Image 1 (tube, rainbow, N blue to C red):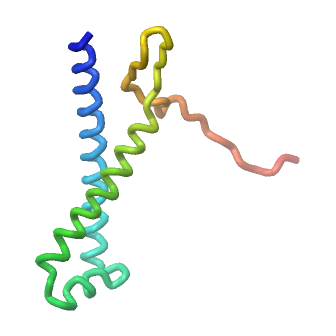
Image 2 (spheres, rainbow, N blue to C red):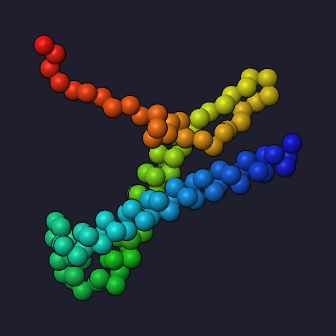
Image 3 (cartoon, rainbow, N blue to C red):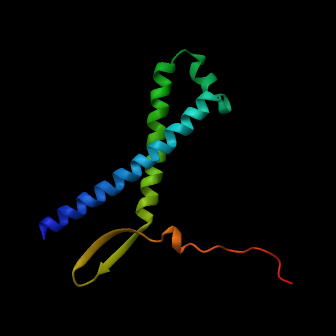
Length: 111
């Protein structure tokens, strides 16, 4: 029983780590675009007091926390929960829906 629990913990850790990496590789390019194109004056503000050696790493950490946390939250919300009242809880790491299950919605006026 303990080995099964450890296996589930490893699966959950890998699942969350994968989503964290997705968040990092989403957030950091967005930050790079913000800095390169100076959206909202971000680069100008960062270099205003010549503290860019401190500002850019802090921005990278905060973008990692924000986007990584959001991606992990999306991953958790997309899990199927398999609850058996007689044996306790167990988690199957499967997304709730795949792209094949999404159906198109037609929007238009009926006549």
